[in-house]
Length: 180
Image (cartoon, rainbow, N blue to C red; front, side):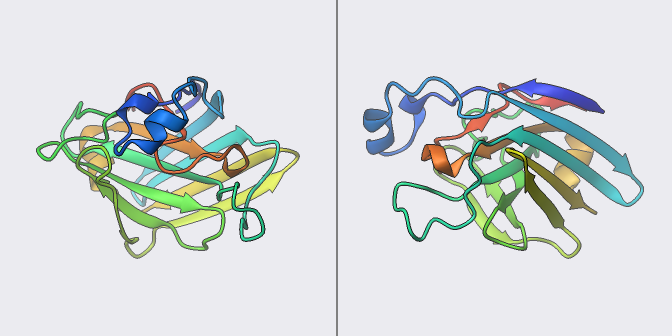
């Protein structure tokens, strides 16, 4: 499957804690408005490729405290149609994978609602390959066993542009699940 996805900015009022909702109350436009998505399933598992415009790549932010690292994450519900924008619920969690431009290996992530994302080492064989050129990130996830995606066949993703101070809940996301 190949498609271009229009992304949205999650409502800042939904962010846990008070700082983001107050400091970024006027942030209603996504930093990344569109991303190309290509998904392939095979007997070896899943390959998911994302491509998006990023005028400035941020791989190292140690010299600028106002910048954050570029990143992207894929999520699948463990139960079909679990709430996406709220990162699931305790009874309907999400499973996924997180890539950051400053890290060679991805993380496995899980969530059971806003502010509940947990990181862990990725399963053996989960890899990412990223390349930044001409103002565009090209990222490929290779996921030999992604059970939640295989079962529900629904996928959502998020993109963070560090140069735009995106981090945590400040990101660009799919408006809902993409049915595969």
